[in-house]
Length: 135
Image (tube, rainbow, N blue to C red; front, top):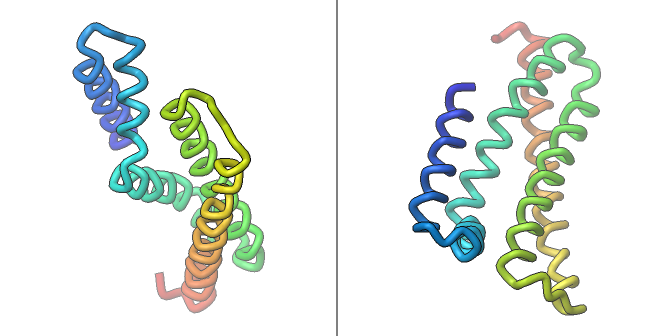
């Protein structure tokens, strides 16, 4: 939890230093900076870290429902990531959306498939360890 608070304080600090008193342009540049691949990867790892604890607890309590836990948290991670990406993309492009830009949803669907499969694999591994009492 302290990591989340530290990251929120860091993001607020970065926003204030980026804006330099010009809030409107500062917000646009700050959101545009959030589209960097490094920030997106860090965001995915952050979401996975926080949701992983909840998924692990659910699997420990009911190991036979590991598929539902992996699917639920995998789709939730993907949904949060897609919403984050869409908001940053729309703000950085001035809310001008064309048909071509709507077709950019395919990478998001591929990201969803990759994240969901990773969650399912991790849930299966946790379930195996719980059943074998290796933890």
